[in-house]
Length: 406
Image 1 (cartoon, one colour):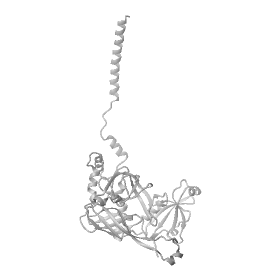
Image 2 (cartoon, rainbow, N blue to C red):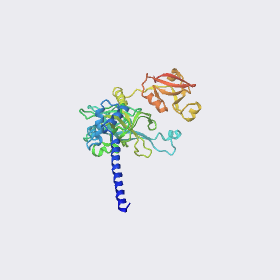
Image 3 (cartoon, rainbow, N blue to C red):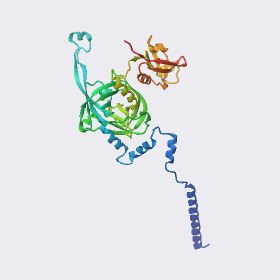
Image 4 (cartoon, rainbow, N blue to C red):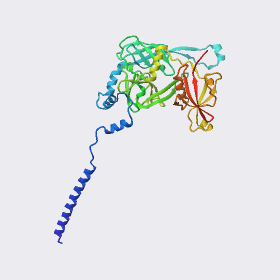
């Protein structure tokens, strides 16, 4: 075979190979192409696996979809509707201080030099929001609960002297009243319907910035967690934060008492606690769920306080690893009864020292905070069903909370 014929033959083979490759490639492409995916099919599958708890799913979905669709979205609209009902709360407290003495607090020297104390006016500030057109305002107890003077500042620059209708230190809720009519107000939503990961909006008066331009500060984030139980408060205070909504929306000093809104502009909580190991916002803020607030407000309007003057008649301690090993428990969880007062409600109910409480009203008890939260949510005369481990056996004890008598 000559050199020229060999070149022609190799060229012919290359053309045939290229043609075969094109045909095979098109065939494979046709086989891999499936039917066009149906729009929304994955969304429907997700909805079936995780059904929405909201009553109006279409409305909420459309609102959520609008958050990133334009500058004027669900968040900006909710802020526009709600801002007029958010207020700054300025308070004046009278605090009693003891003067420094080289003898300290020794009572021997006090009998000669007297109880050297003085009273000082201390100013504080926080946030609040109006919940009715006739001027009822919600804020935290730690903002206004001990105030002698309270001033509410509106977004139009007007100020009103506020009256403290009632306050509850345990739940950290205070109800104020300003005189007038046709005030802008916020709608209270349903905190049982919050979804972890949904958008939320925090409004308030951090660091007193409200005083500069009469406008609330807005921060946006998501619901980071729900049903979080906390126990907090300064010395001499007893606050039980139960079922709290956790959010990464920035909450700072002065935001206390302000509303946490969903994208509909409804109140789902009241900003109350921040976790600040470094004295700054680290994305851990907590709001009192609005459904709990509703119950508290109803009592504050009627009685000016929440009736908690009852006693249980026993002391408990959180179970640690050492106690769990001693009683051969599977995990360090629950509380152990350490003391029972003779003749008290717990004694009459049948409690004994070393009883281990693992459930209360069907809710799991992890520590003393879990139990205190359930007990402090109750009223005198209520009965709590407690699941108890005693001697390796499980039993249920009914504990009726008795009104404290003098």
